[in-house]
Image 1: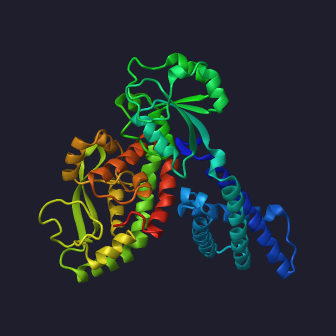
Image 2: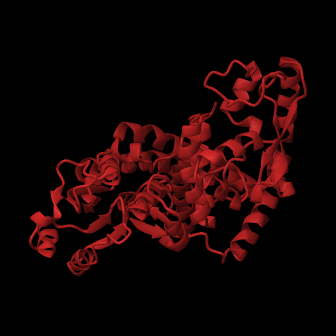
Image 3: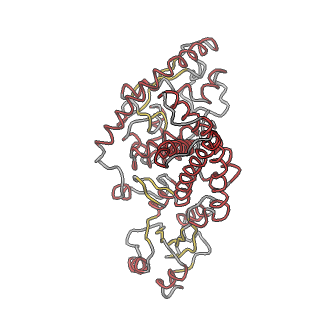
Length: 461
């Protein structure tokens, strides 16, 4: 994987993205030539059309990221990728038409955009047939050797067996006989020359997955494998990199303390984040005010009670604030106390079901963002009643409050909507990853991919 602004990107995705951008440039140039030939005019110098073509390519590539074209399902499935490619290219072209109309320019001939769209679909699908069908993600999988044969090693084996795994485990070495769960693990005593063993297997990375590391680190073995050219990694860091979450089953306080992350040098990033929040929330409130007003009226007509719903939530540093949303449940929804939302929850009103699916009920939270109680991106704020219980049951839950809560977040785009302690545990792993690795780049990635969640109602309930 390539680490870009503290966030890991798989080699296959990076290669696919670079090839896609080059093919979009080619599609734009081909469309430009087709239009010029049809109109009987000179195609002109490349310099004259480079910026419009680059603008088309950048806009479509951004749309592709937003709708999930580079997700694991799209990388390995041509049929799955085709549907999202068509949506992405259509959204990109529509956005370009609107921009061209707004600025009053003539950078894009309409027929050029149409031809660009047709050419782009053909070239991008061909790219996926070559990269995804012939090479596939397996061509970029690292060969991993696991030191350990206990529950942690077993979890790594399960990760490696996933279809979208970026690595393949070539062997397990049992360092002791006390906690052997992986039956095929080879005993350390059975390997005479560990350095040669690693070289023969073509190991590129060794993951330390011992159940007990105190006074048990095989320093000599690790040094031999390191000198054999293998990268040495801890199980917690390895899982974080591969899954984009902090694994609560393997993490410990010392890893959180000594690992990279939670940087204090975020003053400039925090200022930029707050400035973006102010500008974006103002723009969003102005643009969506008629929509919010319309659905506020519909909520009032659909059921008794106020149009807006206010509730205390836990924010930065554990401080409470009043969150505002369009009401989507009956006013007696919590007559018996605080409850988790459930699938097909009978407390949700008819209009409430609609606005939840398309996330319209979240729009008034832009006011919370403008006030500074929330940010656009961050962990979802929970209720104090749930937080008190979750902090007792889940380790490191309080650490998610070290960043401002958000309307959307890393957990929201990576984990389906959940309403249980187990779901909260999984979402906490993603929230900790965000708090640990926050950068403006990660915020941008989350904002873009929120469009995918909205379009396909992923996680909505």
